[in-house]
Amino acid sequence: MRVIGWSGPRNLSTAMMYAFGARPDCAVSDEPFYAAYLAATGVEHPMGDAVLGAQPTDPARVARECSGQAPGGRTYWYQKHMCQHMLDDFPLDWAEGARHVFLIRHPARVVASYAQKRGLPTLDDLGYVRQAALHARFGGPVVDSTTIRADPAAALGALCDAIDMPFDPAMLTWPAGGHPSDGIWAAHWYDAVHRSTGFAEPEGPLPVLDGSAGQLVADAMPYYEALLSVALR
Image (cartoon, rainbow, N blue to C red; front, top):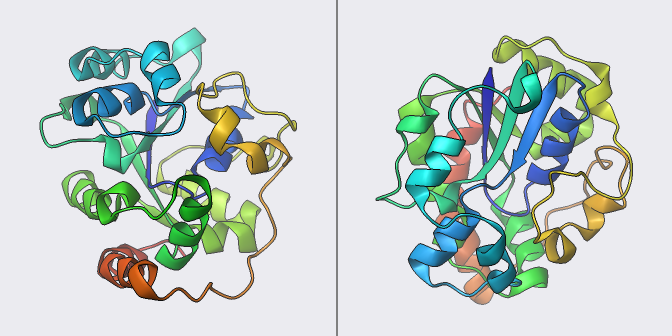
């Protein structure tokens, strides 16, 4: 069974991949469309040349590789995808028939975290608009990062139940230092999760952002709140 995790950046998406990857019955893939997205848009990202050299850049080829049975004869295949990578002319038929999971996080936290790694993003960089469209097309459970960090066992148990997958307590911990399926970009983006062995404790107060960053948060909030309204509790 394929489980497609749709997220934006800086959103516990890698920790979620590690949780599924800790299961002995589950293969995982890390952002298969990243190089195709960079090649199609020409946008500059940290380690962009390395990403382009590490993955296929033809979205049709990537779509074929994301279809079919789980690698290695595993029962499940969790695919971590960034919503913003799915451009208008990229195929989506490969995602039909899979279970879909939507991971969200408050825009203020996302913007503050993203800005530390790449500078102030655009609304498209954050993926909220595309995520809402993908949810409208495929449906599937929505889970907020706050809920996961407050009680990982309960949140992941509810999520697994929603996608007809038995919960495995192995999902709650993983070895420090990364996962063999990490993308080559992990060296820039994954330092915090590489130091982790499980989901972090609940976060503190929301960061207060003003100016362009504050406006970006305001622009993203309607999409976040719409998904939050149907999120698992």
